[in-house]
Image 1 (cartoon, rainbow, N blue to C red):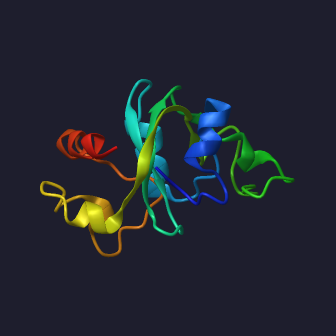
Image 2: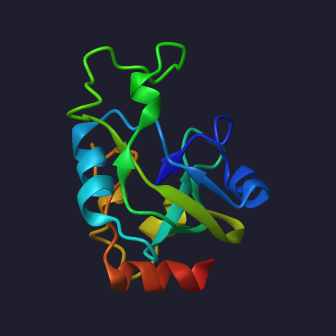
Length: 145
């Protein structure tokens, strides 16, 4: 799960303990969150548009997916006037802090780590805010954190 640290960082999640992951407005990222993430799943928390960009820690999915209320709030920056509360378009999950990395695990480090060659975030053009990571890749990265 990617976030710009200026908007929401791993340190902010650590302070809050848990937080709804709202504002996802990409269908493919929404589908990953809505259909595949389950309570208890661990996720990599990635800082994007940072110096350096990279994995900042680990979080856990705390809740099942549910409609994102920010889509229905005209005062919210994530408001979507075409989203219908009776047929929600946008979903969220709650995430919970697990662990902060000792240091950011940069894209260069990921590219140079054996076993991560096929990781989606390392492929050209893959810039979704939510992307799956297989269990083998997760275990390799967990050792770096």
